[in-house]
Length: 402
Image (cartoon, rainbow, N blue to C red; front, side, top):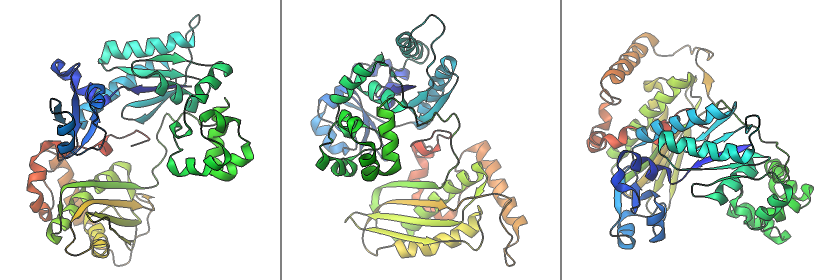
């Protein structure tokens, strides 16, 4: 199994189209330019962390160069990297925009180490993005190896003794799927490193971390139980939303964000040819409170009018008056393939609504993603004027992870 991860991908992508940025402290900012979502190694050395507000980053790294993210461009480079990996592997998983798992099989007469180096070097030559490659007996071990080989490394480890040395040096939290809460469950049993987990009793690991933890135990011991997925599994839920940039307590603006997120969500429902059987509106407030509203349409639907009628009462339940809201997510669940839902006796006539939706899609496809949109979004005119807000990481389709 192999794992490939781009080094500081967003920054590396910016450097591909602007050589001036190479070897300089660079930070990539989120939608509204409020926080650093990626940073170069030079900026990291100055103390800037991912998620740090821009005003704090400027104090720590005043000479840094800060640019707004461009996910359309990052996707272009991501898919070029994906094409290269597919040239050298018969089975590739598009895990995230900058991360791939693949079935490692070197050509006759070549070693796994040579395959790792060839893949790293070919992507650098073709795409000009530095990546790190790890190859091991399982995907979990491959990821640990690539993490330890950063930056611009290429390392194949298939010897159990070499694996044990690697695992002994790494805390258990470096395993994908084990964060603070799970690590806290393991600590009383003396399980603090990856090797501790690999050497622990399998039944104890299952009792503490359920079946998913047991799968990691098998993987750490060299038994591949987590397969490569060349195609993304079907979605169980679809979601759109994010930070507002500037917090708001204005219910008109909050409603505008609901409509914006719903229009984006409907794009995904249409793309995947599914209907939503339940909607959840989740709103986070500046004072730490969270509001949640949930409702189901009479029948699963992907129609704007029906889903907006469903979402309105959800927002009312999630709304905390006079408290600034900072973030919203709209989640569609109980997804049903389109065409398989039962017709409701009192459904509004579909012809007119579907004709409007079709016209909207065609106009936006030709002239711009949000040229036609609901008038309720007029309070967000500044958001629509900024082209950086037209495309987000969740709009990169086909990958398994965010």
